[in-house]
Length: 190
Length: 190
DNA sequence: CCTACCGATCGGTAGG
DNA sequence: CCTACCGATCGGTAGG
Image (cartoon, rainbow over all chains, first blue to last red; front, side, top):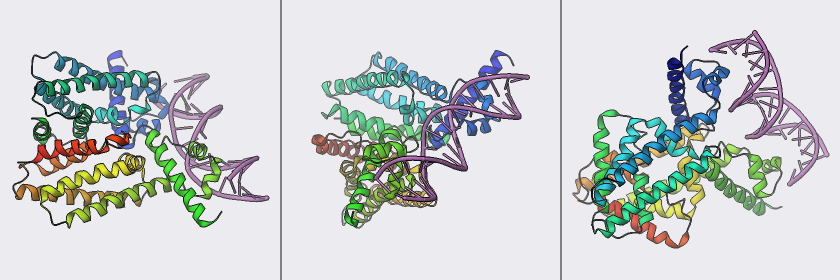
């Protein structure tokens, strides 16, 4: 097997792991079951990965990058803060549709990351949240968002947007995105 | 030790379990650590409970009752559907404040319930969701809630409301409740 | 990539 | 409520 095949097989294992972790949670997922799903003996998995935790690290790190990059891009966009909030809502919903299983694991299993990845993850999360809250605050200062506690607003948005990765149906992606945006933007606007 | 003391000790163990499960997740929580937290040897826990799973069953069942009862009460209230939705939002936020750890476990660890409790739980959940969606639909029919996909609206609300059990700070309970309600109700109203 | 295997940890029990 | 212990399962390794 050449490097390309090896890489794609690893990728395949990571995808299967994301699905397994989504279904059962990280701790309740065994390498034995993962092996069975990808058609290998349990020990053979270790020809492709170093540890079960590496799978979680890979999944969480990849997803974190997407959000960090998305935030950077939105931050530097020449738009109003209100529009930026709308773009952030879109970022979460669209990303959830692109890779539902990975985003589910990233959202719900990150606390099982081993150190030092857990600390790095938490720092990135904190950074992201601060950026998000700042944009919300700016919207209030610009007079387009009603005056409310920034942290409460942030938490409400971030959770309202944390579910489309369950509902896999492709056909109503657009409708889901539009409706969530509609509810939240109407809820925030002055 | 008399029955009353035994009951309260069991209650104490359940509370400690709710906190442990909230922190680490059900699968990653060990009876050994729970025992340490309540000041017992691991095996002594079993003088008070039958199994680790029993703890999860108790926590989830208790919380489920609160929501089922809350729903029944709100359903039969002589108010508009819009007001009922507002009451449901309140039910979730207030309940989260009353018993944050239990509600966190109920919300995030129920999938680890053993059968037949898992099936019972899922059925109750389905029932609750149908009632919730019906009230939303009635609000649209009454012309007070904008026409949107009922299921998407439901999911957005239910997730927007699924976080106050983290933020333990008692002093801004009222503000959290009011702000979430404000955002969502503004988001739904025609 | 497989066979064979290991040490650690787990939930739980026996017996007092 | 404790001491002592057990079988099951886990992540992972050795060696080919």
